[in-house]
Image (cartoon, rainbow, N blue to C red; front, side, top):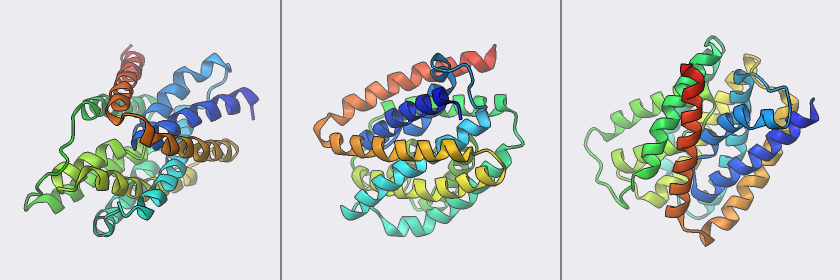
Length: 255
């Protein structure tokens, strides 16, 4: 393995999973563009987009697993929604990841650019502390989670920034519990999606181990610091950074 690639990916992973631990989302949508555009600053060789999406799943899986255990201890995980929506996310994540090997790298980047653009809007919206669920909320949520799983599996993100709004605005869950439940739901998406990527040759084992260890460190640091920082300010800062990265990806795919 190229030491420059390993060092660069470890640094990027620590930074992105730190964000995940800090505000509950965002690490996955930062990893791929930073790997694509910051990694060349330290090494001439960069893994291809398919491998990077696989590594993004590794960092997301280890970061959200650690955060999910902490949320469960705090009683912030709604087990009923795990039973209802976890299998949907798992099946869709596996399908999206396995099918992504057939897609050109440019197509994956276009999908990623669309998702990051949408995430900027979601990060800027202030979720209500409590929303009332509609009668059609469960089937609607299942359909939305299926779409989230397909997209997240293909581009290598846990998509917590998409699952949390569904839990709050569609299923009527309070924001704190939605964040904790979202962490565990991300595991349902990420684990099968990673298996799909690995089975189709889109994961580098050596780089995967390095990224996994870095993810545990970054997420733990972020979670420890989270209570001391204003969440609103961090979300606005993340929205600005994601907007810049999304614009950079759009420039790349449209030229």
